[in-house]
Image (cartoon, rainbow, N blue to C red; front, side, top):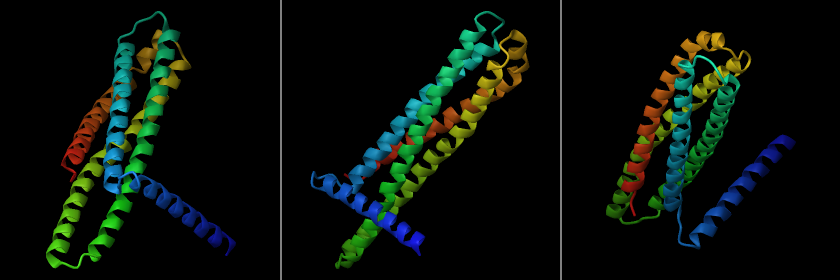
Length: 212
């Protein structure tokens, strides 16, 4: 019982906090639809930043596969830096996608509720059609966004494994032994970049096509 009360209290606090958040924005003339556009744009921007980091990591990996000696420790530190930057960007993407889903869910619930308040059948049907179309377009955009997001962590983990393995044996033989894995990671990063291009394009389309 105590746990149930604590859980419900937490839900109430979150709901109350979100309500206050939305109310504050509405006083400024910014509504959930505006916030959704802003959050989709922010998620797109975060993916673009992460994409740049993965491109830099890909460049470093290609340099390493053709590397034959000299300054191995420096190269290893550079790879570690690329990994750290990419990991930070990926975490930002995760937060931004969560933000998109949160506002979208609240917007659609509110929209459904308000449709029931429209007494004119023609207007109610028009609003319902607009909601259905917005949901369809949102679903397509979110699917692309989630596909790219879901690919990031596995690729990042393999990149991290490579960086650690290289760090443990800084010599030309180690680089040669890890060459096959480095090539595999390069291929996976390239596929990820393609998914991110699709995701970014879908986000742009959604924002541009969103009713003003």
